[in-house]
Length: 229
Image (cartoon, rainbow, N blue to C red; front, side, top):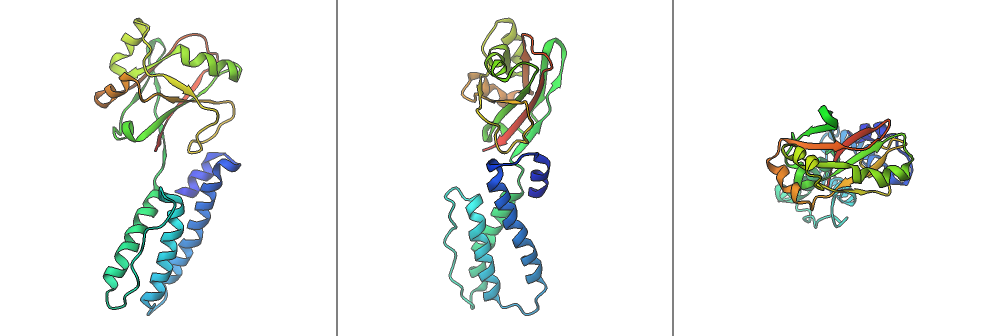
């Protein structure tokens, strides 16, 4: 899964160095584990030595502290207790490696310049930042300046009120670069939705996001992403 994400991203450079280092580590560990599984009468101490090294290296990429937990000392007469913590750490670390941090969200066009994105995974509302990737035939600087002022974002049930009453809705903040979790495409400008808006709380009971773009943005293309934090 990690390799597929990097292959599909179309990106290069320093923004993805950490991801490639993680992939390099996983590519080293996978054949090692396969090899260990073929050894008959493998001594538990040898296996434990490999496991604590794996868990320690993975913690560099998956732990907030970038440090491993304190694993138990090897006790040959208490193998279950010895292996319990390191196996738990490996499961957690590997599940985080497999998790896709960026989720592409459907943004379907409706009437009157409105686009709608259903909320299929409500947990994303509180655990993710939301990104609009926007492209048009306008110069980047002009798009970055004009677009936030010409867009209304809010719960689908309230978008008509936002547009008709010229209310602010959920604001946008222009990002200097594309978030590294999102596939990069040339010509796009990236905006983060403001989760401090009063309308954000309404999304918990809403059927989805609604986006209305006013003004003239020739060649407009919009992608919508949730990036787990």
